[in-house]
Image 1 (tube, rainbow, N blue to C red):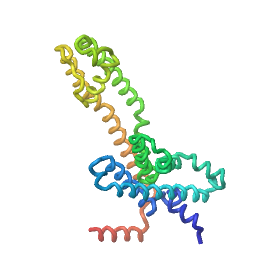
Image 2 (image 1 turned 60 degrees about the vertical axis):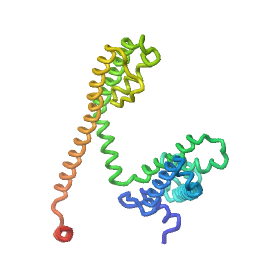
Image 3 (image 1 turned 30 degrees about the vertical axis):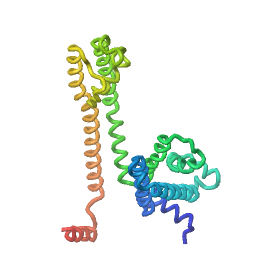
Image 4 (image 1 turned 90 degrees about the horizontal axis):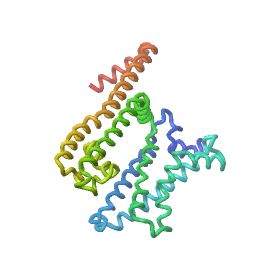
Length: 283
């Protein structure tokens, strides 16, 4: 019979399960993380917080102790792996990226009673770091394959992406310089220098257009219109490169799967009948 530590390890460590599938415990933890993050977000709204202050305190205590217990359980059960056995192995596990994210997620809860003067905004940001824990729990087959596919797409198109980034930076400098020349005398606060004009160039070229800074002269407006039109293509360029890369990666993966299935040969008669019966049942 497996020991308690081994059973906990199999429930918490994705790599301990066949196919790196998520256990029911990890699925429940993902739900708990999302609910706790939602509670932190809703707590920042004064009208909601004033209506149920005790509820948010209770939720924070519940989720805080839940994640602390989970972290300690992961630290203890990690000893089932040879490289993490003993005190030295536990320290080695605690220094891994996954364990550091887990520790970062529980740190605000542990420090809250001792740091009453902690800035409220910074405290909320630290509590929202729990959301990154979903990434550590979603290291299963489909998610890993998707992440690897996106990463390979970025690497394959790294030169095209680097070139488009250089083009974007050059256009930003040119746009800021042009508006600096056209508007510096009229609006010295906004366009009195190229660095100041960079804010307008970034907002315009990315098609955000906050509207807090805009040209007032005829020449400035003409130049701004040309820059705005250029920004449409600037945003579409890296998006098109990435879309093409992901499409190519997907087609290559599909073709590779087809070659593997062809090399494996036809399925046994029993498996084929079972598959056909399952299909009829689906119909």
